[in-house]
Length: 277
Figure 1: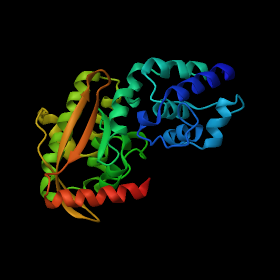
Figure 2: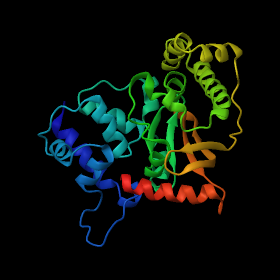
Figure 3: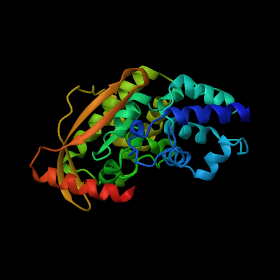
């Protein structure tokens, strides 16, 4: 681990980021040219003291998980992320793991949607980043670990994953998720994370096993989705998508018809989401 170079790299990337780049207000009394240390720490989900010690060349040896969090917080490109790992004395993440790293351009868009339910998911149904309103609508889907990180896996193994949708929509949702996983498996092949999820679900869920044998194919059309939220009740939302083909990630943005009852409820969830920050 090269503490001096790691500290210098973190500092230069922090100073190059502007508050507007990450959806933060600049304020009138800002003396720092870029972001403050406490802002990077908050964006990376770590304490200010931990981050500050890294910049001061006296911090602990950061784990791969902490480095990945720093890469997201500092909006690093894949090449910059690899460099960060090398400076910290870790092997560069394998290409198949890079689906965990949100494209910096995608993150910049997400930062500007702070008052809208939006999230970035990879091709395995794993949520990588969410706005506060998305957490208020869907829950914190980034908290899961292991196979449960994938919505595809949770849907067929954890009944709680289905509570947000009306029972009459479950069959359609099941088929849609299996179609998505078929596409991921076809792309990644045997030995991949997609294959691990499939192998687990074929054993754990007869429903999944039956649908998997039917080979459903995903459609480009995304119909309106119905939700049953514990605080605001029923909503019907449209889901717009922005796809990053290189990293197999998708930005999902949930909207409602203006003036509709769902629109009013979505506005209420935005207030609830702001309280979660």
